[in-house]
Amino acid sequence: MKVLVTGAAGFIGSNFVIRSRQVRPDWQLTVLDAMTYAANLSSLDPVIDDIDVVKGSVSDPAVVDELVAAHDLVVHFAADSHNDNSLEDPWPFIETNIVGTYQLIQAVRRHDKRIHHVSTDEVYGDLALDDPARFTEETPVNPSSPYSASKASADLLVRAWIRSFGLQATLSNCSNNYGPRQHVEKFIPRQITGILDGVKPKLYGEGTNVRDWIHVDDHNDAVIAILEQGRLGETYLIGADGEMNNRDMIALILELMDKPADWFDHVPDRPGHDLRYAIDSTKLRRETDWQPTHPDVRSGLEDTIAWYRDNQDWWRTAKVVAEARYERLGR
Ligand code: NAD
Ligand code: DAU
Image 1 (cartoon, protein in one colour):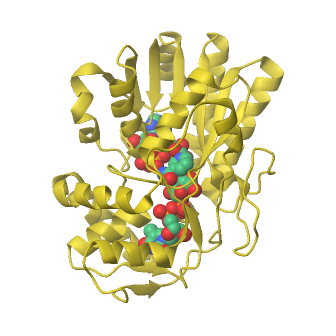
Image 2 (tube, rainbow, N blue to C red; image 1 turned 90 degrees about the vertical axis):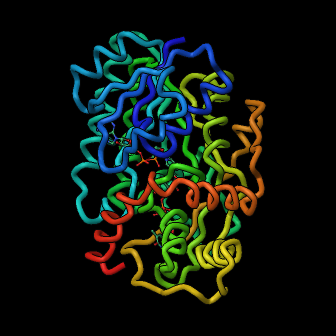
């Protein structure tokens, strides 16, 4: 099978390609990535001789048309992905996440191919901290930030193309990923790399906001399970029951890195900051044989810390740029 993977010089996509080479070695993989600030081509070093890489944008119709025509399946990870950046400058999020998805589904439709659209639990907005509910596939979309609104828009386009044009597509909405090769602007790598440099973790607001953490390999295994066992036209929520508030996550990172529990700073909160995400992945577990193989966040985090300690060349340049941006934002 010829598989086009968009955005695979980024965090989840690069791990998807590496994982796919291990578990589906017969797939022929092509990466389409615009190589934005979030990309790091060296993430693909372990598999670079076995894949094709094309530099280009998902919002470029000519590039997309040619590549989609030459593949059987598109796995669509490409996105602008960071909430804080979307609050500063929403346009790239509209262009890549909405227009880019539009170009892909039009090409998939034209050439009668299949697409899996990778999305986020943030499209559902947030839950109250004391609400026992979790998101399901039936939860109405209610996004809070320009990023999550752009992802919700893309999801709605894919669903409309399924219904109106019979697009061969599946969708997934996953919770917060952690693991190796995540950009240092994101919460967990920002704190790990800061601590390695002797800088205290930065907690937005009071830090009671809850995220539902999942190891990136578990996310990608779920995507493969949906590709092979999921039903066309369906949406699947992906989560591994990893709810934890940000304060507790910082405490765990500090403990694993031998620092005192109170060695962190409070910084101003993110505007519109979602309170809590929580995923009910019953449908995915009922319809496929997927189950997480990294259910213990503590041990997944130990491996992640070791990865950032051992791969400092991978993140040093991006760290300088990301922290300059945070300094401008006062966070
Ligand atoms: P990332 O920012 O690490 O990587 C995104 C990649 O997309 C980068 O390599 C970037 O260069 C590429 N890209 C950006 N604009 C592009 C364009 N116009 N054309 C082609 N490539 C482009 O993001 P990530 O964390 O790996 O997220 C990947 C996908 O998973 C996104 O769709 C995101 O919404 C979704 N998702 C992420 C999480 C998470 O916790 N990180 C959770 C659920 C879903
Ligand atoms: O839920 C899935 C989403 O998870 C994905 O769709 C997004 O692409 C991904 O970036 C992530 O969004 P979040 O906004 O939840 O992730 P982020 O890593 O930016 O922040 C996680 C939490 O930590 C959030 O509550 C904000 C907080 N935070 C973040 C940073 C960078 C801090 O307290 N301090 C920080 O320095």
